[in-house]
Length: 284
Image 1: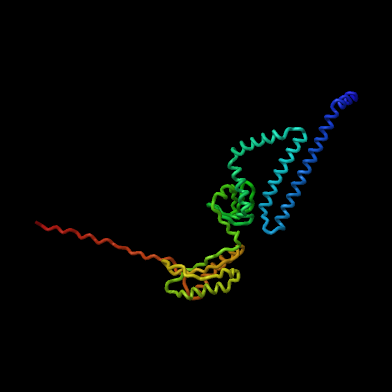
Image 2 (image 1 turned 90 degrees about the horizontal axis):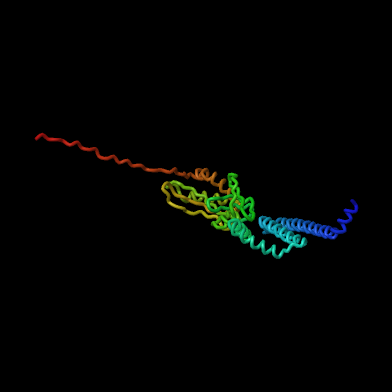
């Protein structure tokens, strides 16, 4: 038995040692690759947390790209260590990539759209956006899809190419929004009194942004009354709170000032057709 093992070692020992060295180098490459992926991930996480304006979504996308890049490079190096001709392999992978690209053109379109959306900073995690018939808060974004959550908690998964190819509204990006608080008063009421009520709201509400300054405008002569509108700007994070509170208290403030908010009215005129006059026959 010992003689057989010795004979095998003498005949194949060099090959075993060579294979062992290559396996060790391959294992070392795998370890270094994993360390590089982990270190790069921590760097991007710190950048997203500490650098102002560095998008968290961009950090996650860059981590994915670097992870795939390091994995591919490590695999090519390992194949080269084992003596496989990587030049022809790369050419073969290039040709296969073209074929796969043609077959998965829609998927690649999502990837390209996702990269463009991130680079242009069209939206980020936490923004409230609207595109087409969909709207919601951005919860997650990757190279393929953007995950939204609607105000009533519905999950939406939208392909990036659909978002890129559609006009998009970002309600959060500018940091502020204008609200229109409108009230319709009766034609018998005083317009000046309504203006005074709106000016009182401007004075009391400290969450309005002073620049641009709030303004009260005459809106229109309607079918049922006169419409007065208060236009004011507020920061996005308090916009809806301010709007709901002011709309809720507006009716009471108008009533305190002796103003009324008329209900829709219609005048209906019924025209009866004239009664038919009976024909009187005369005797001949």
